[in-house]
Length: 260
Image 1: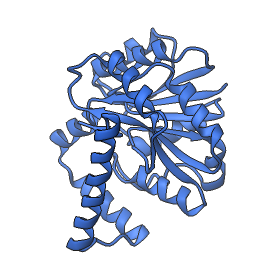
Image 2: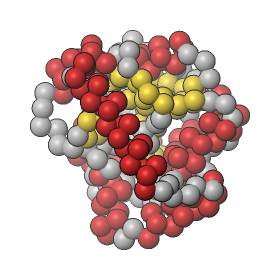
Image 3: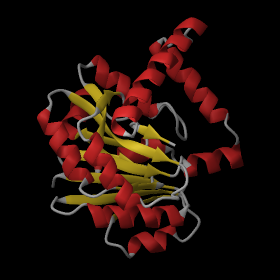
């Protein structure tokens, strides 16, 4: 088995349908499995998943994304795992392009795709084809928590995702920092393009239950890694450098690695 795709869900069936449909359509010529972790959905998500040939794990309540990801990893058969949100649409040959990038470079931690966020108000297939043609050789250090492609032996070296972060927020950055500390560098690549509707499930949870968990998780992350707020001048300088890099990409390639 090459890749195990792990998709945590909590209601939002229409987005899950779009996500699974795009995976099945665009993952040819590779041996993969889909593992869906259902965090207590109360809509028709379960009935849908049981009829599409995916591996399915159901939790009676929302145990949070870190625990759900770890459930999927523990039950996975692939040499690589790809953890994605259910509000994502993937491009043609996305897994193959992830694998090519990963195998061409040593000591990679997380590999994430270029992303366009927001409404799907454009021709995704045509746009993604044009994007990859122009941006396939563009990369930058970093990661996107909504889509993380990881060689599973990395998990054997640094462990699974930390479950101290409740619901969601912080566990992905914690994992990224642990990888970096262990000598693995993470990248965002223009060789893979996805559409991300924009943290649909997490935003719905915050609407219903508030954002206290998010604030608590950020405090926990900052305390654990001794992350201090940067002063105004440093923030402004970094933002200006980021603006110049994106302006360069936009002028010479017509795209940036994160679009909205």
